[in-house]
Length: 320
Image 1 (cartoon, rainbow, N blue to C red):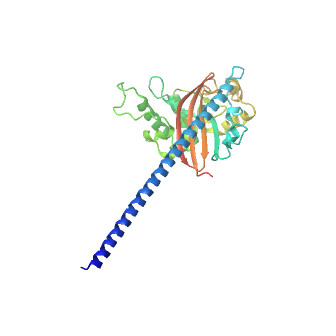
Image 2: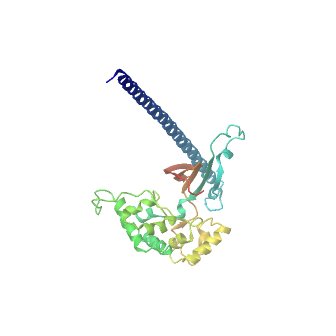
Image 3: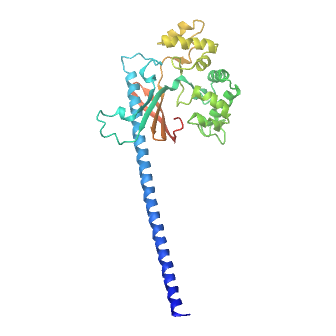
């Protein structure tokens, strides 16, 4: 090998080494930039999540104030769909709720807030199915069977729910308690644990609720299907007539209901009332292409608002 060939090989090796070093440095630089970008994205997402949670918590507090105002001593002990709490908040830009000084909000991302308050006692409470002794209540089971028929669901679904809830609420070690009881459902979607058909549950969901104690149906807010189920001998057509009547004149007391249903006895009307204690508060925050929803169950005891449960759902905005 000549000296010239050896010199060319050394230059080639040095060039190859330099290329490797440059490639390594470029790879490390890209990796550092990517890690920094990822850290910024994570921090931004976490900040947005925290801010969204604060906003929805504030919306829940605002809903609580509305319910407190509705329970003021001077107000009638009645809840109906003509009251301020029943008016949903249409989607509005968040900046409209802030101070008049908009100079500090021009660079803020577009955020839109909406929400609603729903009377939880406008639904049939499945907790009514199990009495204080842990047995199935025949009266309430009959109500649920009628409700199933009103929404085109087989009446056997009511029996399946009653059986499953009895097993779920049974005290461990008590007589008749199953060895492997199902988990106590907290939400309607969890009723599939009891073996309920998903399609039947979908039809029942707008008309049923799970509350911590037995409650009556509020005739001022319930659907015609629920009213017809809660009052024995009442069909859906008669219930629709009551719905039309309450839109003009809400029922203020039990005697008002009796006046519209003179053929019914007080015993037959014992499953309905004109006031409510439990409400569902829903808040929806849309930030760019992300949507965060919060659903909370609250109890109003005079002027005290207690949040019993709260669930947040984060999803893409597919409704635009």
